Image 1 (cartoon, protein in one colour):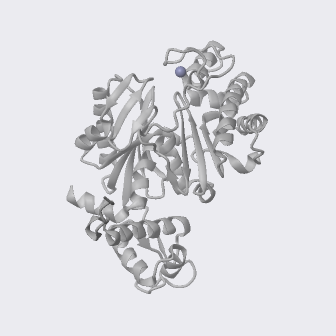
Image 2: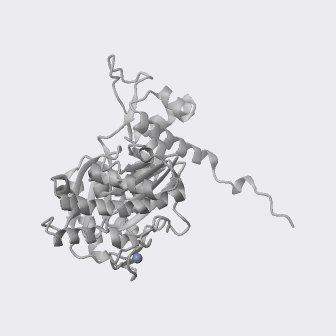
Image 3: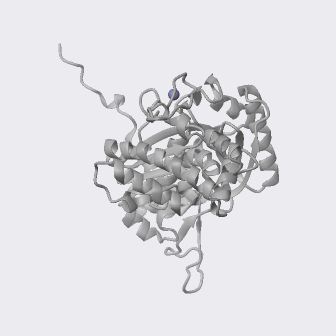
Length: 406
Ligand SMILES: [Zn+2]
């Protein structure tokens, strides 16, 4: 017996899919090149002029795009060559980041720029209390920006996050397990919610708006170092999720000579060696800072504290070794490291690159391949929003349909 013949009715609806994809392609072309004429959008996307005209009209209707007066010459609304740009005035997304010591809630425009953000410590850290706090802060932010039309909510956090079901499977530092946070926040806010882990969220931001987005879309690895450590990788602009959404867990990579206890029960894991809590504790003990926060340590180093700089360079060396391993493992076009010191202090970035060069055997040109985050000092505010914006740019018309239906 052979296999039954696939019938036409069994195939996915190609036309529906193509129209959604082309809307995303048009919106991304305008994001990359705007202001840009319709004819140029057709050239960049390889769509017909008629398709572009149709899609643009839908995107203008939904307020995701706008027509702008040409820089040279008089404005002429309605003329076919009026350039298009991303509409950054009306639509926005909410970003939520849940870290170990604090919650960040932000409002981002469609170019991923921060309109407003609130960053405050947790009260209690049990899931129900955190979800209630997040919902209250979102409500406050929306009240302060009543003219912003919020398209969706993106949430990023550390640990193991299943973005398909919107579940934080495991967050050891917060001691959370199987928290269905996506559904809870959707109910509390009435917004469509997408969730992902830190690194995948920030890689989405790099692919959309990053300093080396063009090359990152070829292939990219993103290493996030905060209180948790995680990794994401993408090829052809698509982020690998893994069948269990578990890709990128490097927290427990053994670090030689490290005696810090890890949340996993072992000693000497990468996450324990480089976590911000450990770092600021050391800085407090050494009298280098007066509050246990990483921005304080970065500021002390920037202001000339040799001790603060050396602590951060020590961490950059440890991170550099892990980054070297990732570079050899994936051989990406771009390796982005989101780490507070390397992102904000040139000395730390130089230390990081030197350490990657010393430990990598891939022979890559460090200045070309190893990059700091494109969002220095604002990674937490950008991360969550990028998860929502990724959806907007993937299928902007689909989003509209879902929003109207809900
Ligand atoms: Zn561990």
